[in-house]
Each structure stands twice: as C-alpha cells, then as structure tokens.
Length: 93
Image 1 (cartoon, rainbow, N blue to C red):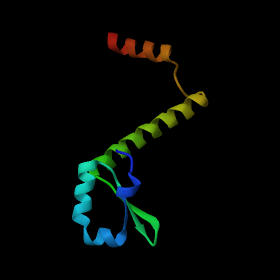
Image 2 (cartoon, one colour):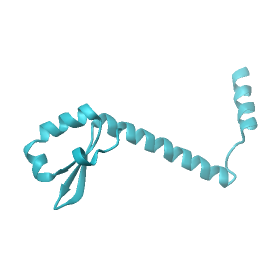
Image 3 (tube, rainbow, N blue to C red):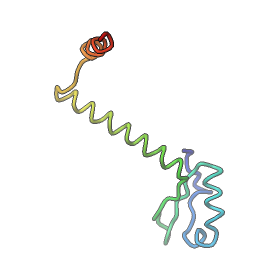
Image 4 (cartoon, helix red, strand yellow):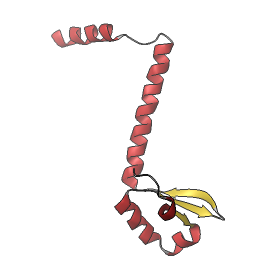
C-alpha cells in the first residue's frame, strides 16, 4: 500500500457522497487509501479490496510470529537443530 498524501487522500464525507465512483477509481489507480472526514475528524478509510487482503495477510503473519516468539520465551519451542533432526527423520522414512 502506498503512503497517504495528505493533500489528496483526506476527503470530507460530503465530497465522497457526490463523487464516490471517482474516489474508487483514484484508490484503484494510486493504491492509496482515502481518509474520509466528518466535521473535520477522520471517521473512515476507503481502501482497495486487494490492498485490504494484503494487509490482512501481513497481520496474520505478524500475529503468528508474535505467538511463536511468546511460545519460545515460555520454553514451548523446539530449537533449530532438533527441528531439523525431526524433519530429516521423517524425510528418510
């Protein structure tokens, strides 16, 4: 996902209502989200569906990494050598 450009990607709700198709096209072309404001405050983000899926995949991966790190800290992990040995045993069968 591209970084937000403050002067182009923060849009009042009133403008989004009247030109939604244009903003969807902008998001598709630039791969940048649009921040929708109401009364001068950010209230929503309009994001390309593919970019949203990519974000979710990254979040899932980071969550898995954090869980793994926590397990290692709690002594629940398997060190590299033991893991490699177990895999090699299974491959040889």
